[in-house]
Picture 1 (spheres, rainbow, N blue to C red):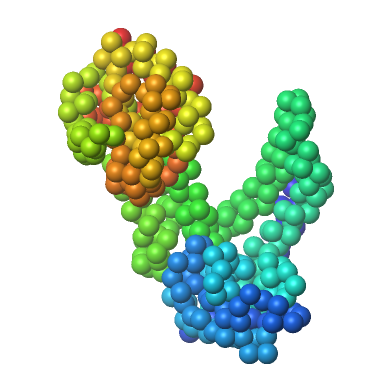
Picture 2 (picture 1 turned 30 degrees about the vertical axis):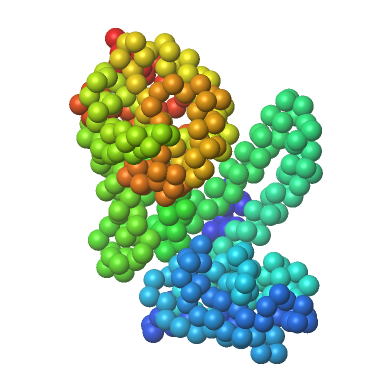
Length: 370
């Protein structure tokens, strides 16, 4: 508990009023010989993935300064030109920041400035201290060769560390329910939150003018509406995709002929999917004659790998894909952000189950196929 209050005091002390003009500056300097860097051009991009370039500057004597207007406080990413990996990420508000890059080790970056960034720095430092205190450095190195009992002990230690880190962050979120940083944590956890959790976490932001057009808030509202439409009792979106032979299969043609139909989102490259397939085959054999059908939707990109996996795993039910990987249009319609995942419908196409866990699937089907 003392650790939580320690961090709480830090982010309360660093809180300050933002600049009224919404301007920011990011002063970049290289500690050491800048010529050692792979590029003398630095890119500042918006977003965690850095997919929208805000500005590009050349280093002069190992220095450059980005200046601009931040309409919506959020993460920015700093890159060296030609690199896909960011040097660092900065939570940019209307404030002044300094970034110091170690010439010999460019991933060793120090960022200073900004109330939220100061909390992020403190949180990171405390997390590292706890990590070392729990001796997780050595424990994780020995994990691959550890016995099952030792692995369980390591997992317990890791869980304790994670719990302490969560307590620190949660203290900030509770104290700052409408902070841009709080909003960013919702975005990062989007795929893992249930519909109820998502609605609850976003509720404090509803109706606030400063978040009306915030890209993160707009995306969260879109996802809430989409996930709401996929809850039990709602009509499942119909679709049509091709099987491995190029024959189109329509979802409604499948579920209308069966009491219960499950869309199984999977891929040949997905280890958890492949590990579950033998169990799924057994469940299919057990319930198929009682009116259970599966329609596999693959997030594959390679036709031959997809077909081979179907054959190797003995998946006798219909399988379809557009071979667009994570951009599969059915995956987008059903908000699939991880696999394996499922949607289960009745004979009318009404959703009766979503993301039913593998250890609950047998009992679920037994209940609905009485």
